[in-house]
Image 1 (tube, rainbow, N blue to C red):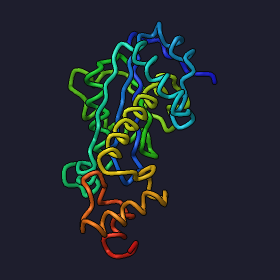
Image 2 (tube, rainbow, N blue to C red; image 1 turned 180 degrees about the vertical axis):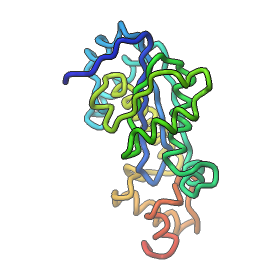
Image 3 (spheres, one colour; image 1 turned 90 degrees about the vertical axis):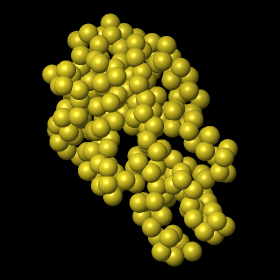
Length: 224
């Protein structure tokens, strides 16, 4: 893969993991490396985390943390996600994600940041993030693109960290609540977990995103 390499002092990539599941957190991760280490990062074999086996992803996550100058992670719980979807505390899910992307960038303080945009209109997301950045960082070069994790090695690295952190959270949640499968709405194991938990307890655990259509159907009797 021919990665795009930018010539700046400290380069950051930001990506998410867990935007779609009905169970578990959304994770936003950022990785920042000096420009002189970009080739070393690419040579690790980083790629979109969805294309990696769990074993390879864990190995790469460890190598990335060793190579990176700064790593920043935010774990967003289901209640916060639901409030964003209902526009209680944010103006939608993209606004929530933009706020956490801005936090991550603010913590890393890079000279340039590449972000995998969750918005189908990346420029709209870029403007949103810029407005939420600390004032002293609003002049940085910010590039937001769809599928940036397939174009920039530093974003692919961030996607690996985000995915690994989310998987750690999922393992912890399963140890507490039982096996719920992948956590995605299309997974029969996930739907079965939700249905059986609700039948037993008359409610759903706090690890569930109640604004997802799968849950709304369950609560209205559609998945009984």
